[in-house]
Image 1: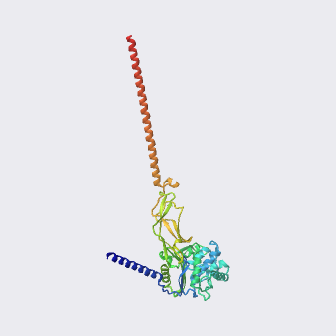
Image 2: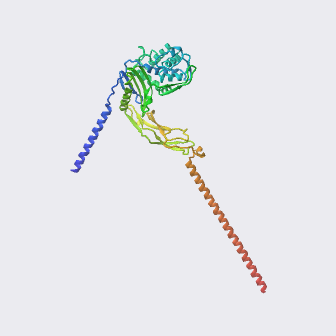
Length: 439
């Protein structure tokens, strides 16, 4: 009877667990779509190559200053960053947002790119367009030829800045393609992800400090690493951003939104994507991940630990068996170093493609070592070696002392034997003389 009751309870528990897991799985699959204000939006997952969310993805809407991502992309593709550009009167006269350029002012292409991305300078965008193509008509033609080549069938640009025009329009899907191409370029990614930038003194202007319009960058926990805002009125603005957190990489575009809801809508889309895309936990935080060599350190080898959890995000059809890891340590870590210093990376691959990487850090301070550290010997090892050498020297000294004592002992024995032999000889001679005297 007791066995029957136990068996019944076990079956009931198993069924309950199974139902609970199925319920949880159903919940995970049916994540509620966010309700956003934007007229058009899209979320693309770079890890899986999938569109996670879209709303009116083909609807033609004005991008406004998000257009500048296209402008700086063409500038990077066609001009050296250190090329000097002389600002025309037409470029300097561009209104609305600007970096306050003056006619005849000379700046580098790099300065103008930052002028486009941070304060959203229409004057900087115009100057770049002229620098690329010589005149604005040719540059706008190049813009439209390029988007056609990218596959943007619902986009047409009328100017390099995004100033309002009935002939300046795009779709959420097209702008995602442009954003993806722009933010995977290291130069643009860095500029579009900078909070500030110092433009050196020019022939027409003193040194100036540029500040970004992208508020996400002010929040280190947002996951947004770069992007571009667009604005015309409080109820008609846009934004395109790149997001990366725990290895999850997204491109998000929001068009036709309000100034109040734009940031909220992006946050809703990020939250939705994080629930929708299933991540595989590859390694935990603070896990030992090899040793790193510390040049000239009091300690020459330290354990490296993962700084965060490492995830891999895979397409639905991909197998977890495709996930592999590789540890790469820096070879230029030189003492002194402090706890928390990044000393390497744990790279996560899916089918030989790098999908994520986790920084490896040390957990203790290391001061500069003694002279032997220059040949890879730590202070501790130096002490141990010195102790061993001292012990060896002491052994040799003890052996030498023992040998000296032994030699002295043997010498005393020899001397004693010589004396004894001499005494014996003297006694024999004495006995011999005494015998002679008797006779």
